[in-house]
Length: 133
Image (cartoon, rainbow, N blue to C red; front, side, top):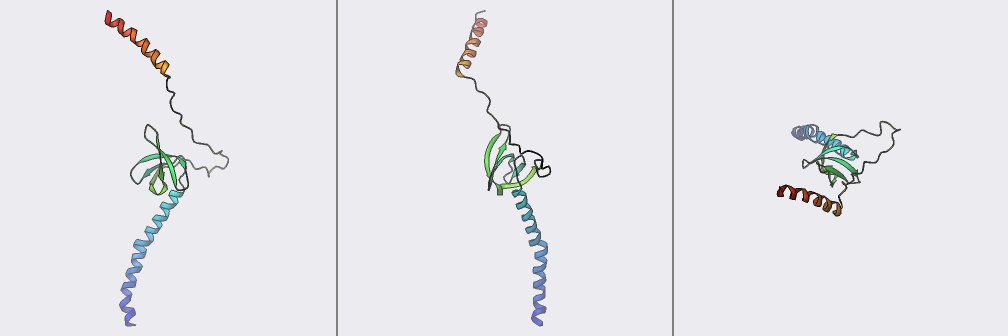
């Protein structure tokens, strides 16, 4: 009986630590894992490193995000997501909605070298006339 009385404070200390520290941390970890599993195309995220971007394509353990005004794309691991800033509209709310593919971003049409040469030729005589006068 005397041993039980001596161990009671130690047992209480472990119980308090479990309910104040361990249990809330496990709950928070589970919420973060659920958030990372539910990521989908169109979500705007912030990574652990502070990079803000929009998810363009998802894979099993990674996804491709689009970042910045130049719309640079790169692949990141799911565990690197810190938070979702703007979730995409969820498709599971409306079953009648067709699955939409993300828009493909096409590069701007580049001018052919012959068109560039023609433009230079057209600009050159005008510049020479102003110098002669």
